[in-house]
Amino acid sequence: MRKSLCHVLVFLLLFMAGSTEIYAVSSDQIPGWPEAPKIVETTGVLIEDSTGTVLYDKKMHQHMYPASTTKVLSALIAIENCDLSEEVVFTETGTAEVTPDSANIGMQMGEVLTMEQCLYAMLLASANEVSSQVAEHVAGSVEKFAEMMNQKAAELGCTDSHFANANGWHDDDHYTSAYDMALILRAAIKNETFCKISGSTSYEIPPTNMNGEARQLGNHHAMLMPGPYHYKGVFAGKTGSTDQAGNTLVTACKKKDITLICMVMQSQEAAVVDDTAKLFDYGYGKFQKLQMTDPEQTQEGGYAYVPADATAEDIESQDTPQGDLIASQYLYQGIPVGTALAAATASVSDPEAASGELAPTQGISEEDESSLLDVRPVAEGQKKVYYAIIGVLSFLILLCLFLIIKMVRKDKG
Image (cartoon, rainbow, N blue to C red; front, side, top):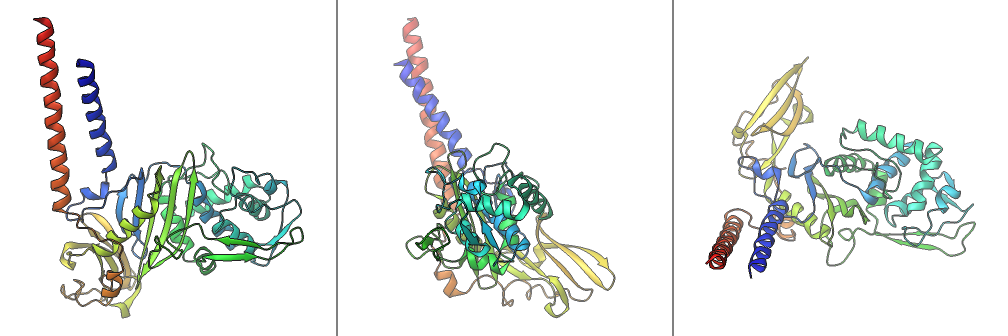
């Protein structure tokens, strides 16, 4: 009897520890920040593109395995260094990875694809052998291409990453973080070619010099495809999955003039799509984009992305003169929420004009708002449920302890 009670007690303690881990979200600690939805992934991040504001942070700097989301960086480097019409001849470097346990499109030794066809194979079909062959084509070897990847990542501000290959096949020395991968996709979506390819639902590679059949490719990203998981506004992204990485997903979504980027990492369940949708709902439903400077006198930026009930009075501006211009850093509760480079007289002086009520770029339209999958009420209701669960568990633990003490006293008697 005592053993059973002890087992129950240990289970309850572990359950409570697990629950705390699932709900650990750093951004929830920001005063005045909207309470975030809960996700099952180990790490995740949501950022607004134009301001760089981090809306959601769950261990966003923790080192994780990226799996095939790696191909976002590989594709971007290939696009920046090659012409789409270049011919890529397949060697043993690529064809060695045509195996049953590796995503591939069955390329053969000596077979030729254009770089454009290779990019579709990488981003839609997640073809590992094509990614490695592109790496060799661009840099002369996979190893040298990995050096280019690390250099590019550093240029983009990534500090938690080290890449060892072009396709994301598991390597202990191949890792990144949710935040770094969001930065990488943020850079990639500024490239029209990347967006066109990544956002395509399908593509046909015609017969080649070694294959008489056309290859039909479909996008693996369910939020881009027609069907139950489609999310309005999603226009680019990449899936990933290995035993070590679990399921990963990086996604970009645009509604009106607001682009959000989400990365979730290490889910052992098929929850990455649902959780990405939750975070997009949160980012569009609980925040607003405030115009902080006169747009006619602003060269760069001029906006802050902040909680929906915030006003200009809640935002601190740290200004640095640069000749005839002022460089501004906007802070909300000490958190960076936007920047501006504008004429010294370009500040918005009327708090109501900057509150979002008069700004045409604030929030999303009613039409877009109605298309959100599920804008969840996330404040007091969830807290009450969570505290109730904690209370019940605490009562059960005390009950177990009481019964154990009673049994011990009985044995001694």
